Image 1 (cartoon, rainbow, N blue to C red):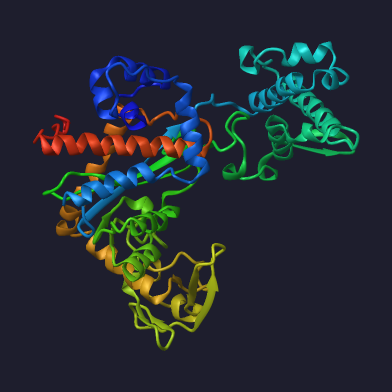
Image 2: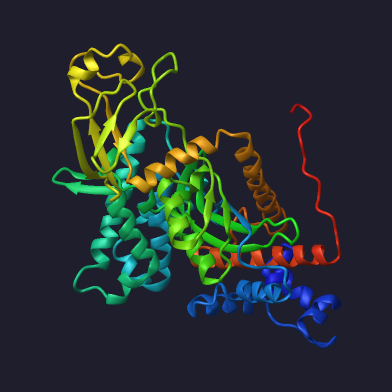
Length: 481
Protein backbone atom coordinates (compact mmCIF):
# COMPACT_ATOMS: atom_id res chain seq x y z
CA UNK A 1 0.00 0.00 0.00
CA UNK A 2 2.89 2.37 0.69
CA UNK A 3 4.13 1.75 -2.86
CA UNK A 4 0.69 2.56 -4.26
CA UNK A 5 0.63 5.67 -2.11
CA UNK A 6 3.84 6.95 -3.72
CA UNK A 7 2.76 5.86 -7.19
CA UNK A 8 -0.21 8.23 -6.94
CA UNK A 9 1.41 10.92 -4.79
CA UNK A 10 -1.01 10.60 -1.86
CA UNK A 11 -0.79 11.57 1.78
CA UNK A 12 -1.31 8.97 4.53
CA UNK A 13 -4.89 10.08 5.08
CA UNK A 14 -5.67 10.04 1.35
CA UNK A 15 -4.12 6.58 0.94
CA UNK A 16 -6.22 5.17 3.78
CA UNK A 17 -9.32 6.66 2.15
CA UNK A 18 -8.45 4.96 -1.16
CA UNK A 19 -8.35 1.56 0.55
CA UNK A 20 -11.91 2.06 1.77
CA UNK A 21 -13.27 3.56 -1.44
CA UNK A 22 -11.51 2.06 -4.48
CA UNK A 23 -12.19 -1.39 -5.85
CA UNK A 24 -8.87 -1.65 -7.72
CA UNK A 25 -6.92 -1.00 -4.51
CA UNK A 26 -8.95 -3.64 -2.65
CA UNK A 27 -8.17 -6.11 -5.44
CA UNK A 28 -4.45 -5.36 -5.38
CA UNK A 29 -4.32 -5.62 -1.58
CA UNK A 30 -6.37 -8.85 -1.51
CA UNK A 31 -9.22 -7.33 0.54
CA UNK A 32 -12.93 -8.05 0.49
CA UNK A 33 -15.14 -5.39 -1.06
CA UNK A 34 -16.73 -4.62 2.32
CA UNK A 35 -13.41 -4.35 4.15
CA UNK A 36 -13.59 -1.25 6.41
CA UNK A 37 -9.91 -0.37 5.98
CA UNK A 38 -7.83 1.11 8.79
CA UNK A 39 -6.84 4.39 10.37
CA UNK A 40 -4.16 6.31 8.50
CA UNK A 41 -1.88 6.51 11.58
CA UNK A 42 -1.12 2.79 11.08
CA UNK A 43 1.16 3.78 8.19
CA UNK A 44 3.36 5.84 10.51
CA UNK A 45 3.72 2.90 12.89
CA UNK A 46 4.50 0.59 9.96
CA UNK A 47 7.32 2.82 8.71
CA UNK A 48 8.75 3.05 12.21
CA UNK A 49 8.83 -0.76 12.51
CA UNK A 50 10.58 -1.11 9.15
CA UNK A 51 13.30 1.30 10.24
CA UNK A 52 13.61 -0.25 13.69
CA UNK A 53 14.25 -3.70 12.20
CA UNK A 54 16.45 -2.52 9.32
CA UNK A 55 14.00 -3.56 6.60
CA UNK A 56 13.94 -0.32 4.61
CA UNK A 57 15.32 -1.98 1.47
CA UNK A 58 13.09 -5.07 1.65
CA UNK A 59 10.30 -3.88 -0.64
CA UNK A 60 12.73 -2.83 -3.39
CA UNK A 61 14.64 -6.10 -3.05
CA UNK A 62 11.46 -8.15 -3.45
CA UNK A 63 10.38 -6.30 -6.58
CA UNK A 64 13.85 -6.55 -8.15
CA UNK A 65 14.00 -10.28 -7.39
CA UNK A 66 10.61 -10.80 -9.01
CA UNK A 67 11.62 -8.83 -12.12
CA UNK A 68 14.88 -10.80 -12.31
CA UNK A 69 12.84 -14.00 -12.24
CA UNK A 70 10.96 -12.73 -15.29
CA UNK A 71 14.25 -12.37 -17.14
CA UNK A 72 13.94 -8.57 -17.43
CA UNK A 73 16.78 -7.70 -15.06
CA UNK A 74 20.26 -9.17 -14.88
CA UNK A 75 23.77 -8.34 -13.83
CA UNK A 76 26.17 -6.94 -16.40
CA UNK A 77 25.04 -4.55 -19.07
CA UNK A 78 24.93 -0.81 -18.46
CA UNK A 79 23.66 1.32 -15.60
CA UNK A 80 23.72 5.04 -14.86
CA UNK A 81 23.54 7.13 -11.70
CA UNK A 82 22.75 10.71 -10.83
CA UNK A 83 21.58 12.70 -7.83
CA UNK A 84 19.08 15.43 -7.08
CA UNK A 85 18.42 17.66 -4.12
CA UNK A 86 15.61 16.98 -1.65
CA UNK A 87 14.10 19.75 0.46
CA UNK A 88 13.60 19.00 4.14
CA UNK A 89 10.11 19.17 5.63
CA UNK A 90 11.17 22.22 7.64
CA UNK A 91 11.62 25.90 6.92
CA UNK A 92 15.08 27.18 5.96
CA UNK A 93 16.27 29.48 8.75
CA UNK A 94 19.01 32.06 8.98
CA UNK A 95 21.25 31.98 12.04
CA UNK A 96 19.18 34.35 14.16
CA UNK A 97 15.96 32.51 13.35
CA UNK A 98 17.66 29.19 14.02
CA UNK A 99 18.91 30.00 17.53
CA UNK A 100 15.66 31.73 18.46
CA UNK A 101 13.49 28.88 17.21
CA UNK A 102 15.76 26.26 18.82
CA UNK A 103 15.36 27.91 22.22
CA UNK A 104 11.63 28.38 21.70
CA UNK A 105 11.22 24.68 20.79
CA UNK A 106 13.07 23.68 23.97
CA UNK A 107 10.91 26.01 26.07
CA UNK A 108 7.74 24.58 24.52
CA UNK A 109 8.87 21.02 25.32
CA UNK A 110 9.84 21.93 28.89
CA UNK A 111 6.63 23.84 29.53
CA UNK A 112 4.69 20.69 28.63
CA UNK A 113 6.95 18.25 30.49
CA UNK A 114 7.92 20.27 33.59
CA UNK A 115 5.84 23.46 33.86
CA UNK A 116 6.57 24.11 37.54
CA UNK A 117 10.32 23.64 37.06
CA UNK A 118 10.34 26.04 34.10
CA UNK A 119 8.20 28.73 35.78
CA UNK A 120 10.96 29.32 38.32
CA UNK A 121 13.40 30.29 35.52
CA UNK A 122 11.44 32.39 33.03
CA UNK A 123 10.00 35.89 33.35
CA UNK A 124 7.42 37.91 31.43
CA UNK A 125 10.16 39.08 29.04
CA UNK A 126 10.73 35.47 27.98
CA UNK A 127 7.09 35.14 26.96
CA UNK A 128 7.40 38.27 24.84
CA UNK A 129 10.57 37.01 23.15
CA UNK A 130 9.68 33.35 22.70
CA UNK A 131 5.89 33.12 22.92
CA UNK A 132 5.41 33.28 19.13
CA UNK A 133 7.31 31.61 16.33
CA UNK A 134 10.55 33.45 15.66
CA UNK A 135 9.78 33.80 11.96
CA UNK A 136 6.48 35.57 12.67
CA UNK A 137 8.04 39.01 13.13
CA UNK A 138 10.81 41.07 11.59
CA UNK A 139 14.17 41.63 13.18
CA UNK A 140 15.46 45.13 13.71
CA UNK A 141 17.67 46.38 10.86
CA UNK A 142 20.48 47.76 12.99
CA UNK A 143 23.52 45.48 13.19
CA UNK A 144 24.14 46.35 16.85
CA UNK A 145 20.52 45.65 17.76
CA UNK A 146 20.61 42.26 16.05
CA UNK A 147 23.89 41.41 17.75
CA UNK A 148 22.41 42.32 21.12
CA UNK A 149 19.30 40.21 20.44
CA UNK A 150 21.38 37.17 19.43
CA UNK A 151 23.53 37.46 22.55
CA UNK A 152 20.41 37.78 24.71
CA UNK A 153 19.07 34.54 23.20
CA UNK A 154 22.45 32.94 23.91
CA UNK A 155 22.35 33.97 27.57
CA UNK A 156 18.79 32.70 27.95
CA UNK A 157 19.74 29.38 26.37
CA UNK A 158 22.68 28.94 28.71
CA UNK A 159 20.35 29.68 31.64
CA UNK A 160 18.08 26.80 30.62
CA UNK A 161 21.00 24.43 29.98
CA UNK A 162 22.72 25.17 33.28
CA UNK A 163 19.48 24.59 35.15
CA UNK A 164 18.65 21.38 33.26
CA UNK A 165 22.12 19.92 33.82
CA UNK A 166 22.46 21.07 37.42
CA UNK A 167 23.04 18.23 39.94
CA UNK A 168 19.69 18.81 41.66
CA UNK A 169 17.55 18.81 38.51
CA UNK A 170 15.61 15.72 37.42
CA UNK A 171 17.79 13.58 35.18
CA UNK A 172 15.06 13.03 32.62
CA UNK A 173 14.99 16.72 31.72
CA UNK A 174 18.28 16.48 29.88
CA UNK A 175 16.97 13.49 27.91
CA UNK A 176 14.22 15.54 26.25
CA UNK A 177 15.13 15.68 22.52
CA UNK A 178 14.55 19.43 22.27
CA UNK A 179 16.94 20.02 25.18
CA UNK A 180 19.59 17.83 23.56
CA UNK A 181 19.22 19.79 20.32
CA UNK A 182 19.50 23.05 22.28
CA UNK A 183 22.71 21.90 23.93
CA UNK A 184 24.30 20.90 20.63
CA UNK A 185 23.16 24.09 18.87
CA UNK A 186 24.61 26.31 21.59
CA UNK A 187 27.98 24.54 21.39
CA UNK A 188 27.99 25.17 17.64
CA UNK A 189 26.73 28.76 17.65
CA UNK A 190 28.06 30.41 20.85
CA UNK A 191 31.08 30.62 23.08
CA UNK A 192 31.50 32.19 26.49
CA UNK A 193 34.41 34.02 28.06
CA UNK A 194 34.95 36.43 30.92
CA UNK A 195 33.11 39.16 29.01
CA UNK A 196 29.93 37.21 28.32
CA UNK A 197 28.25 35.25 25.52
CA UNK A 198 29.33 35.77 21.89
CA UNK A 199 28.53 34.50 18.40
CA UNK A 200 30.95 32.12 16.80
CA UNK A 201 32.24 33.59 13.55
CA UNK A 202 34.15 32.36 10.51
CA UNK A 203 36.52 29.49 11.18
CA UNK A 204 35.27 29.26 14.76
CA UNK A 205 32.05 27.71 13.43
CA UNK A 206 31.94 23.96 12.76
CA UNK A 207 31.81 22.92 9.07
CA UNK A 208 28.41 22.84 7.40
CA UNK A 209 28.32 19.04 7.26
CA UNK A 210 28.41 18.95 11.09
CA UNK A 211 26.23 21.98 11.87
CA UNK A 212 22.51 21.80 12.62
CA UNK A 213 20.22 23.68 10.24
CA UNK A 214 16.87 23.19 11.98
CA UNK A 215 15.79 22.28 15.53
CA UNK A 216 13.04 20.10 14.09
CA UNK A 217 15.15 17.93 11.77
CA UNK A 218 18.63 17.30 13.21
CA UNK A 219 19.69 15.31 10.11
CA UNK A 220 18.98 18.08 7.58
CA UNK A 221 21.93 20.16 6.36
CA UNK A 222 22.27 23.31 4.29
CA UNK A 223 24.28 23.09 1.09
CA UNK A 224 24.89 25.05 -2.11
CA UNK A 225 25.38 23.60 -5.58
CA UNK A 226 25.75 25.67 -8.76
CA UNK A 227 24.54 28.75 -6.94
CA UNK A 228 21.37 27.13 -5.55
CA UNK A 229 21.11 26.58 -1.82
CA UNK A 230 18.76 24.25 0.01
CA UNK A 231 18.25 22.72 3.43
CA UNK A 232 17.71 18.99 3.38
CA UNK A 233 19.12 15.93 1.65
CA UNK A 234 20.33 14.41 -1.64
CA UNK A 235 19.12 11.21 -3.23
CA UNK A 236 21.17 9.15 -5.69
CA UNK A 237 19.26 6.95 -8.15
CA UNK A 238 20.90 4.17 -10.19
CA UNK A 239 19.03 2.54 -13.06
CA UNK A 240 19.57 0.07 -15.86
CA UNK A 241 19.71 1.51 -19.38
CA UNK A 242 19.63 -1.47 -21.77
CA UNK A 243 17.76 -0.97 -25.03
CA UNK A 244 16.10 -4.40 -24.92
CA UNK A 245 14.78 -4.25 -21.34
CA UNK A 246 12.84 -1.83 -19.12
CA UNK A 247 14.85 0.84 -17.35
CA UNK A 248 14.58 -0.07 -13.66
CA UNK A 249 15.94 1.62 -10.54
CA UNK A 250 18.37 -0.77 -8.86
CA UNK A 251 19.85 1.34 -6.07
CA UNK A 252 18.72 4.28 -3.92
CA UNK A 253 21.05 6.16 -1.60
CA UNK A 254 20.00 9.09 0.57
CA UNK A 255 22.53 11.41 2.20
CA UNK A 256 22.45 14.81 3.81
CA UNK A 257 22.86 17.74 1.46
CA UNK A 258 26.57 18.28 2.15
CA UNK A 259 27.80 14.84 1.01
CA UNK A 260 29.63 15.12 -2.32
CA UNK A 261 28.76 12.77 -5.17
CA UNK A 262 32.33 11.48 -5.22
CA UNK A 263 31.85 10.10 -1.70
CA UNK A 264 28.92 7.95 -2.85
CA UNK A 265 30.45 6.09 -5.81
CA UNK A 266 31.88 3.26 -3.71
CA UNK A 267 28.63 2.96 -1.73
CA UNK A 268 26.66 2.58 -4.97
CA UNK A 269 28.91 -0.26 -6.11
CA UNK A 270 28.69 -1.98 -2.73
CA UNK A 271 24.90 -1.87 -2.82
CA UNK A 272 24.73 -3.23 -6.35
CA UNK A 273 27.15 -6.00 -5.42
CA UNK A 274 24.95 -6.96 -2.46
CA UNK A 275 21.98 -7.29 -4.82
CA UNK A 276 24.10 -9.17 -7.39
CA UNK A 277 23.25 -6.52 -9.98
CA UNK A 278 26.68 -5.11 -10.74
CA UNK A 279 26.87 -3.63 -14.26
CA UNK A 280 29.69 -4.11 -16.72
CA UNK A 281 29.59 -0.39 -17.47
CA UNK A 282 28.54 2.37 -15.10
CA UNK A 283 27.83 5.79 -16.67
CA UNK A 284 28.01 8.76 -14.31
CA UNK A 285 28.69 12.49 -14.46
CA UNK A 286 31.94 14.16 -13.45
CA UNK A 287 30.91 14.45 -9.81
CA UNK A 288 31.20 10.68 -9.28
CA UNK A 289 34.53 10.11 -11.04
CA UNK A 290 38.14 10.28 -9.90
CA UNK A 291 41.14 8.31 -11.08
CA UNK A 292 40.97 6.27 -7.87
CA UNK A 293 37.32 5.41 -8.54
CA UNK A 294 38.11 4.22 -12.06
CA UNK A 295 40.84 1.88 -10.80
CA UNK A 296 38.87 0.62 -7.79
CA UNK A 297 35.71 -0.04 -9.81
CA UNK A 298 37.66 -2.12 -12.33
CA UNK A 299 39.86 -4.02 -9.88
CA UNK A 300 37.32 -4.66 -7.12
CA UNK A 301 34.04 -5.00 -9.00
CA UNK A 302 34.96 -5.51 -12.66
CA UNK A 303 33.08 -2.33 -13.60
CA UNK A 304 34.15 0.11 -16.27
CA UNK A 305 33.31 3.47 -14.71
CA UNK A 306 32.51 5.86 -17.56
CA UNK A 307 32.51 9.55 -16.77
CA UNK A 308 34.52 12.67 -17.67
CA UNK A 309 37.54 13.85 -15.70
CA UNK A 310 38.58 17.47 -15.49
CA UNK A 311 41.26 18.67 -17.92
CA UNK A 312 44.84 19.30 -16.84
CA UNK A 313 44.87 23.06 -16.26
CA UNK A 314 48.00 23.33 -14.12
CA UNK A 315 50.34 26.23 -14.93
CA UNK A 316 47.99 27.54 -17.63
CA UNK A 317 49.19 30.93 -18.89
CA UNK A 318 47.27 33.83 -20.35
CA UNK A 319 47.61 32.54 -23.93
CA UNK A 320 46.12 29.16 -22.95
CA UNK A 321 49.24 27.24 -24.05
CA UNK A 322 51.10 25.09 -21.56
CA UNK A 323 52.79 21.73 -21.15
CA UNK A 324 50.36 19.43 -19.41
CA UNK A 325 51.47 16.41 -17.40
CA UNK A 326 50.89 14.19 -20.43
CA UNK A 327 53.80 15.96 -22.16
CA UNK A 328 56.21 14.56 -19.56
CA UNK A 329 57.65 11.02 -19.67
CA UNK A 330 57.45 9.19 -16.36
CA UNK A 331 59.85 6.38 -15.43
CA UNK A 332 58.06 4.77 -12.50
CA UNK A 333 60.84 2.30 -11.77
CA UNK A 334 63.61 4.88 -11.66
CA UNK A 335 61.32 7.49 -10.08
CA UNK A 336 62.31 10.15 -12.58
CA UNK A 337 60.40 12.37 -15.01
CA UNK A 338 61.72 13.73 -18.32
CA UNK A 339 60.34 17.04 -19.59
CA UNK A 340 59.61 17.88 -23.28
CA UNK A 341 63.09 19.46 -23.47
CA UNK A 342 64.71 16.18 -22.33
CA UNK A 343 65.65 17.47 -18.86
CA UNK A 344 65.36 14.97 -16.01
CA UNK A 345 63.84 15.68 -12.61
CA UNK A 346 66.13 15.74 -9.60
CA UNK A 347 63.77 14.91 -6.71
CA UNK A 348 60.84 12.54 -6.12
CA UNK A 349 59.16 12.61 -2.70
CA UNK A 350 56.28 10.42 -1.58
CA UNK A 351 53.58 12.26 0.38
CA UNK A 352 49.91 12.00 1.30
CA UNK A 353 46.95 14.33 1.04
CA UNK A 354 44.97 15.23 4.14
CA UNK A 355 42.43 12.63 2.97
CA UNK A 356 45.12 9.93 3.03
CA UNK A 357 45.53 9.63 -0.75
CA UNK A 358 49.18 8.86 -1.62
CA UNK A 359 50.93 11.04 -4.18
CA UNK A 360 54.40 11.95 -5.41
CA UNK A 361 55.96 15.41 -5.69
CA UNK A 362 58.47 15.74 -8.52
CA UNK A 363 60.77 18.78 -8.97
CA UNK A 364 63.10 20.05 -11.66
CA UNK A 365 66.08 22.26 -10.83
CA UNK A 366 65.96 26.02 -11.19
CA UNK A 367 69.09 25.84 -13.35
CA UNK A 368 67.44 23.58 -15.94
CA UNK A 369 64.20 25.56 -16.03
CA UNK A 370 65.76 29.02 -15.79
CA UNK A 371 67.52 28.81 -19.16
CA UNK A 372 64.78 26.79 -20.89
CA UNK A 373 63.57 28.47 -24.14
CA UNK A 374 59.98 27.31 -23.53
CA UNK A 375 59.84 28.16 -19.83
CA UNK A 376 56.74 30.37 -20.21
CA UNK A 377 54.77 27.40 -21.54
CA UNK A 378 55.81 25.19 -18.66
CA UNK A 379 55.84 27.02 -15.32
CA UNK A 380 54.76 30.26 -13.69
CA UNK A 381 57.46 30.07 -11.01
CA UNK A 382 59.50 33.26 -10.61
CA UNK A 383 62.31 33.23 -13.14
CA UNK A 384 65.55 31.88 -11.74
CA UNK A 385 64.14 30.86 -8.35
CA UNK A 386 62.10 27.69 -8.91
CA UNK A 387 61.78 24.96 -11.50
CA UNK A 388 58.74 23.06 -12.73
CA UNK A 389 57.09 20.72 -10.26
CA UNK A 390 54.56 17.92 -10.83
CA UNK A 391 52.11 16.15 -8.55
CA UNK A 392 51.59 12.51 -9.51
CA UNK A 393 49.05 9.99 -8.33
CA UNK A 394 50.01 6.33 -7.84
CA UNK A 395 51.00 4.70 -11.13
CA UNK A 396 47.74 2.87 -11.84
CA UNK A 397 45.67 5.97 -11.05
CA UNK A 398 47.93 8.31 -13.02
CA UNK A 399 47.77 6.07 -16.08
CA UNK A 400 43.98 5.78 -15.78
CA UNK A 401 43.75 9.58 -15.47
CA UNK A 402 45.77 10.23 -18.62
CA UNK A 403 43.97 7.50 -20.57
CA UNK A 404 40.53 8.87 -19.70
CA UNK A 405 41.52 12.43 -20.57
CA UNK A 406 42.58 11.27 -24.03
CA UNK A 407 39.49 9.11 -24.55
CA UNK A 408 36.93 11.72 -23.57
CA UNK A 409 38.12 14.06 -26.33
CA UNK A 410 37.11 11.59 -29.06
CA UNK A 411 33.72 11.60 -30.81
CA UNK A 412 33.39 7.86 -30.20
CA UNK A 413 33.63 8.29 -26.43
CA UNK A 414 31.22 11.23 -26.44
CA UNK A 415 28.66 9.22 -28.42
CA UNK A 416 29.01 6.32 -26.01
CA UNK A 417 28.63 8.62 -23.01
CA UNK A 418 25.43 10.24 -24.31
CA UNK A 419 23.38 7.48 -22.69
CA UNK A 420 24.04 8.95 -19.25
CA UNK A 421 21.69 11.87 -19.97
CA UNK A 422 18.70 9.53 -19.81
CA UNK A 423 18.87 9.38 -16.01
CA UNK A 424 17.63 12.98 -15.95
CA UNK A 425 14.29 11.65 -17.18
CA UNK A 426 14.18 9.23 -14.26
CA UNK A 427 14.75 12.05 -11.78
CA UNK A 428 12.06 14.10 -13.52
CA UNK A 429 9.58 11.22 -13.34
CA UNK A 430 10.36 10.61 -9.67
CA UNK A 431 9.87 14.29 -8.85
CA UNK A 432 6.62 14.65 -10.81
CA UNK A 433 5.05 11.28 -10.00
CA UNK A 434 6.21 10.51 -6.46
CA UNK A 435 7.00 14.05 -5.25
CA UNK A 436 10.46 13.27 -3.88
CA UNK A 437 11.63 16.87 -4.28
CA UNK A 438 10.39 17.58 -0.75
CA UNK A 439 10.53 14.86 1.86
CA UNK A 440 7.38 14.11 3.82
CA UNK A 441 9.26 13.16 6.95
CA UNK A 442 11.90 14.45 9.34
CA UNK A 443 15.14 12.55 9.74
CA UNK A 444 17.40 10.75 7.30
CA UNK A 445 16.09 7.17 7.97
CA UNK A 446 12.46 8.05 7.22
CA UNK A 447 13.44 10.16 4.22
CA UNK A 448 15.44 7.25 2.79
CA UNK A 449 12.52 4.88 3.36
CA UNK A 450 10.28 7.26 1.42
CA UNK A 451 12.78 7.24 -1.46
CA UNK A 452 12.76 3.42 -1.46
CA UNK A 453 8.96 3.42 -1.76
CA UNK A 454 9.20 5.99 -4.56
CA UNK A 455 11.79 3.95 -6.49
CA UNK A 456 9.69 0.79 -6.12
CA UNK A 457 6.63 2.65 -7.39
CA UNK A 458 8.58 3.90 -10.43
CA UNK A 459 9.75 0.35 -11.17
CA UNK A 460 6.21 -1.03 -11.10
CA UNK A 461 4.96 1.80 -13.32
CA UNK A 462 7.76 1.16 -15.81
CA UNK A 463 7.28 -2.60 -15.74
CA UNK A 464 3.58 -2.09 -16.52
CA UNK A 465 4.48 0.22 -19.41
CA UNK A 466 6.97 -2.34 -20.75
CA UNK A 467 4.54 -5.28 -20.57
CA UNK A 468 1.74 -3.26 -22.20
CA UNK A 469 4.16 -1.87 -24.82
CA UNK A 470 3.42 1.72 -23.86
CA UNK A 471 5.92 3.93 -25.72
CA UNK A 472 8.25 6.23 -23.83
CA UNK A 473 7.39 9.90 -23.73
CA UNK A 474 9.30 12.07 -26.21
CA UNK A 475 12.29 14.03 -24.98
CA UNK A 476 11.72 17.76 -25.06
CA UNK A 477 14.28 19.58 -27.16
CA UNK A 478 14.79 23.30 -27.63
CA UNK A 479 14.18 24.83 -31.05
CA UNK A 480 17.21 27.03 -30.43
CA UNK A 481 19.63 24.08 -30.55
